Length: 278
Image (cartoon, rainbow, N blue to C red; front, side, top):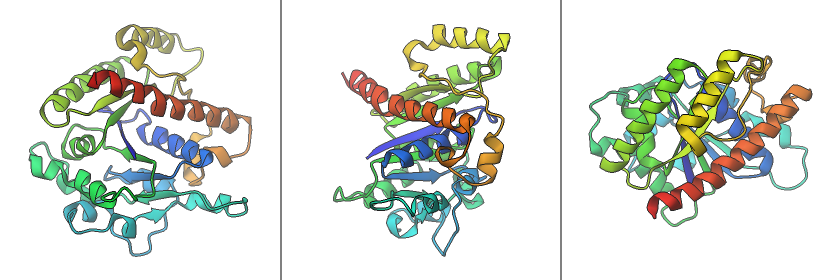
């Protein structure tokens, strides 16, 4: 079970959009996936078309991490409706629903015991190796407070999302330093999965300059492909629909990019984990 946190210390860079794009690619590839919506705004939960039916949200689950049955409280993504007429078994795309309640843990002074709550929840779900997920994507808040650090404690990799702009690039540098410090003190197995350049505007001189800067600064941590700004992305998310099932050439092209990005995250970051441990 690969656990990947999707993080940015700067808001507005499309972190949740990247999470949803990767979830769509995983669904299309038939990879059993769990999305944990750890952002108190719960935008990923909305975008995944979740209809609550009495399940506990992620805030309630991490509060009682030692006792809660994760499998009994995840909700299926509404995206699965698009696959009901396909041949074969229904793919797995579950969601640990976000809620404002999780915000009680989003503070800077969270202790080690609290930082392990999400890791405990996941470990209990996979105690005998029978958890149904190959991939867990954690959508983190845009901060370095308790919830993000809780996610990093439970993860083996952190995928960073950045726009090719001055403040976002600088924020990515700070995040990489924070990961290294956190790895040393709390999570020795944690490594960067890479950096996604998101919302790239073709024809923008500023974006071209910043992308070149990012390649120099971050080298092979900058993943390929980059994700261009997409005019109909808000419409796709507003309809709570996977990009792989949206009509039109624009969505088809975006789907292919997220397929490649998912492959980069899973394969390149696995190589990076071995290098770090070596």
